[in-house]
Length: 452
Image 1: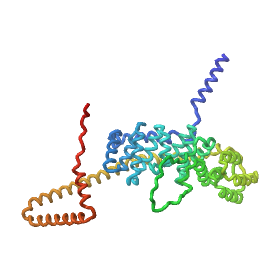
Image 2: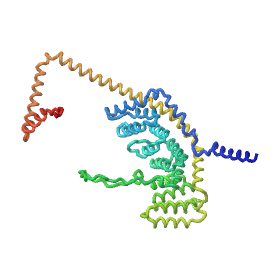
Image 3: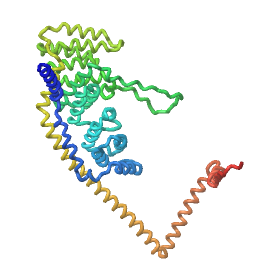
Image 4: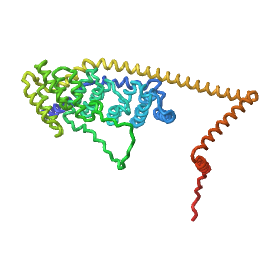
């Protein structure tokens, strides 16, 4: 009997651990998956067969040199299968390289991200989002939040941090859920910063030296924002950016750690003086001292160690009332949950509204494009009819205007003779003309079967 109770208690514990998992952050309802799947029931998308449609768009690209933004939008919204990733990226790149890129629909950005996310194409997704110049995909707040939430739940903090730096580069702090998730993603990533290695420096493997004449040399320029490629700098600037807008103990702690990673030592000294004069109590979380020491241990030896030691010395002079106790990660988790409780319902309602608006806008833009094509076809048809009428008129009035036509012919012949005389008057003209005639008369030899 006792053995049975022990087994039952053990089974209950296992069941409790598996059936009632701890939910982190965003709920399933926030993803709006049902509403997103409902787009496929739209009459416009039901008419599209992705394989055939891609071939049509590829042919249009080869003939006209570009494809319309609404066509790319319909393809991005219609595809489901993973094997069409390369086709989608090819269309996005072609669209980005044409003048139609300014007409890209908002739903295109959302559809591309949703498609790559649902097919677990993490590598392609991160690459496309960071290569804005060649693909031009910019997530909205809903996409930022869903992406970071998924990677956080999967404990893939490196990719979560790669998403978190994107709204910072756009200097976007309008959505509180996005702001807190960015801080949390970067903070958790710093536990294992090596998961996001620095990109290798480009290596010139060309063996031949090629000299190109240029009008002027452009001086090297680094904008300290979009040109940043070092993961440590990107994460540090993200922490500093969003920490600055929080204006509380947690925000100041994130800002200090971010500026240390970003190596803005003068800004740190100015901020510490400002905090001591204006805040005094609960300026920072005490835990940040150990975290900064851990971060600076991984700095290269070429870093300015004297400035780091000076900052650490100033921090050690802070009084006990300047520090607040508590675990920063737990405080961040509470900030994220608080932001979700306040903002999630609003975000869901806005996203559902957008899906309806995007469908109507797509139909409107497509109808407008069809009307333009019809107008262009009519104009071309009118020009064709006018040309046929002119030819018929010329035939019917030939004898009435015979003398006028003959004069035009003589005039053209005179112009051709004058041009020929001008060419013959050039140096060594006869030799060059004779060479051209020989090239025109050249007959390539026939290749027959070799005799044994």
